[in-house]
Image 1 (cartoon, one colour):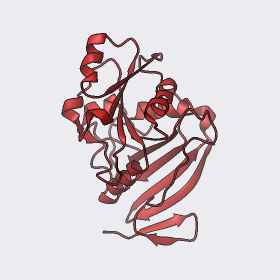
Image 2 (cartoon, rainbow, N blue to C red):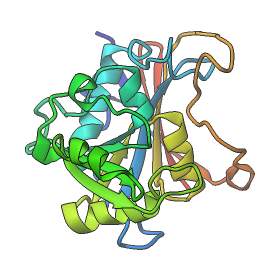
Image 3 (cartoon, helix red, strand yellow):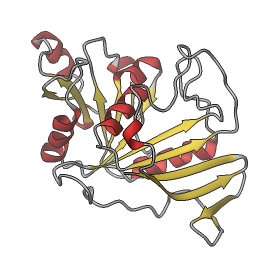
Image 4 (cartoon, rainbow, N blue to C red):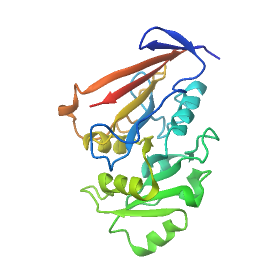
Length: 250
């Protein structure tokens, strides 16, 4: 296994694990205290791709997967969009690096949600499903058999209003720190609505290619022209040829 070096901030030093000593505030220092501290974690190829054949698995190394689990262990809840859940089987646990495990939060739209098939290691009491308030009662009843339901007003795309839903996460489920693991549309919504505090990005030494419609990048949505120069580098780690970047957003 490659040694891990922290390059920034200086001095450079060897460490046992990436982000092992990480701590987050209980709320964002720059926004409404009713909103949790929100950080996004993604892995990308050198050409900016975050999926291969629609799936994120396989892009990062074993060190990246361990880093993902450590970041989960710092969160009260881990959130993904419905598209990520439909694409592949996922587990949102820290694999016993935290007790209790973080809540699993799924942002659902109007489509099918394969909770039973694709959400692994999910306990009903620790699973939360965010739905738009127009969701039919029959579908809500089906989803409620797999976890807690939070219904909030829908945005223009038909998904639950993230600001209101996230406030309910903090108020009703004591979620002070929220980790988001995509997909790209959910990342874009959080950043464009100025809800995300940090971005953790692993750069994998791979080139994937693919047509724009076949592979995804970190964000999918309209141009973020007003946010071009608002991000600050916090740390850089390297392990082998893989680079681990941490940015403050805004």
